Length: 83
Figure (cartoon, rainbow, N blue to C red):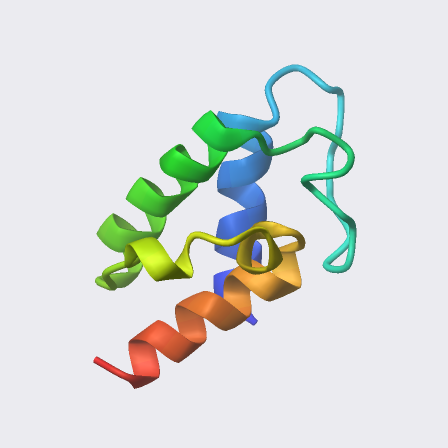
């Protein structure tokens, strides 16, 4: 799944900072581990909107949608299908 790979790359490169991580598990809890915080969510939303041509609405910004790479990818897929 290309969406998941793209999201993982931006999380590791732009959001996670210097954590020494080379990869993330699709089911890893990014919020609980502090890999993504509120600023990270906003950066990720900007990336998703620019890269995938979607619009993330206020009601989409809930912890469940940003908890794992898999959930983020599902959000993007759903948004792309409903354009």
